[in-house]
Image (cartoon, rainbow over all chains, first blue to last red; front, side, top):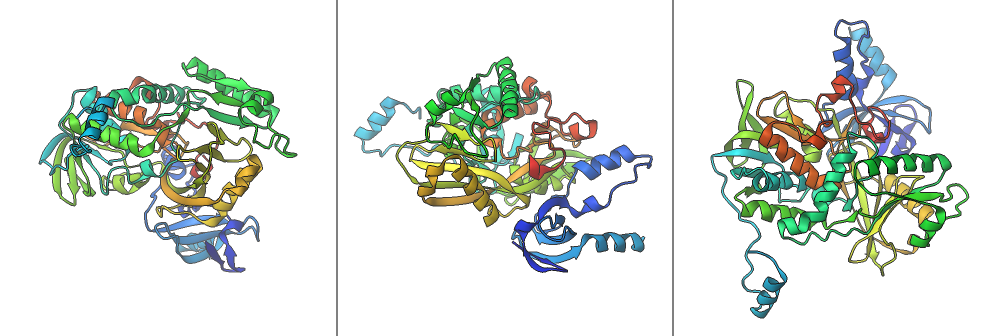
Length: 95
Length: 416
C-alpha cells in the first residue's frame, strides 16, 4: 500500500505503524460519571466495518506524524489522508 | 455408509460406483431448535457435538458459501495445546484430546498426525519462560519437554544454531502436537452431523436476525426467514459484520493473515518448528510442501489477501532460522480474515440478546481449537451453561477486567 502523506507525498506503508480506528483520538473524559463504561467502549469495542474505515497510522520511519487514513478494508484502497492533529483540532473547534 | 478398510476394498472391486455423497443438500425447513450461522470447522463441530453428545438433532448449519470455504481452508493446519494461562490451557488440552480420538469418533480420516511441535528459544530469559509454560501445560494434563540445544540439534540439525544474533538455546517440545488435514476435518464433521439429522445449508447468506421483544427468534437469509429456538454465530472474520445485524459492537477487529506453501520436497522438516526471535512457524505437508507463516499484516482488512512487506518479513525470518529454505520456490500464498480479539483469546458466550449465542475472537489460533470450540459451543447452546474448560471466555470480560492476555500486549489486536 502507498499512503499519500499530506506533507511528504506518496510513501510506502512499510514506513508506518498501524494503531487502529480513528475514534481512538476521542479519549473520554476521565472525570465523567460513567468514565469506566466510556473507557471500556473506547479501549475495547470497535465498529470493525467491512468497507470504508478511518484509522490512525504513525509515520515511524519518517516525520513521526500521526495520520488519519481513510481506507477501504475490502479493497485496501486509500481515499483520503489527513494529519491527525488537524482532524483533532477541527473537531475541538467544531464543538 | 460406514467407512472402513472393508468398504474401501469392496468399492474397489465394484469400480467405485456406489459411493454416496457424504452429506445431503437439504432445503431449509421453517424452524429448527438450533441454527448455527457459519459452516466452517467450528460451526460444523458445534452441530456435530450438539447431535452426537447433547442429543439435539433438529439443527441447521447455514453457510454463505460452501462449507470450509473461509478460514477452515486457509490455515496452516497446526494442532497443539501449549498455552500458559489457566483460562486457556485446559480448553486447548481438551481440544488436543478430542483431536486424538477424532477420526474414530466421526469415522473419517482427518489425517491427524502427532509429529510434534517445537518452540525454539534464543535467550536464557526465554528458556525460563518456556520452562514455566511447560510446567503450566503439565499441570493441565498436557505433555511438554524442555530441550537443550543438543536435543534440538538431534531433532532438527538443519537450523541455524550458531546465529550471531539469535543462537538457539533450546526449545519447548510438545510431542502430541502436530498437524491435521483441514478440509477433512470440515468434511468429517459435516458428514457426522448430517448423518445424525443436521441440515447443512450451503449458499445461503444470513442477512439479519428475527427479533421479537429483544429476543432472537431466527435468522433472515437469502433463502427466506428461518425460525429457531436458539441461534449460534460462529463466523470468525465476519463476526463484526454478522453481529452488527443484532445491533452489537464487539471487542474484535478483523485483520488479514497470510500463509505460504513451497513446491513439494522430500521429507526434511520433522514436525512443526516455531522461531522464538521472530514470528515464524513451519511444517511440511504430506505432499511435501513447506507450509509456513508469520505475523498478521497488522491493519484492519476483510480482503483475504495481504501485502508484500509481510511476505518479505516472513521469508526473512524463515531464512534466519532455516537457511536451506532459500533454495525452495514458493508455490502459493493466500490470506484469511482473522477475528482478532482485544486480548488475543476467544469468546464462547451468550450475548445480551436472549436466544443469540456467539463464538468468535479466535485470532489466528482457531484451527487447533476446532474440536473443543465446537464441543464447548454445543455445551453452551444445549445447557445455557459454559463448559467447565471455557468458563473464562466471557464476552463481558473486557468490561470486568478479567482478560486472558497470553502475550501481555494489551488491547492492541495487531500485536497479539
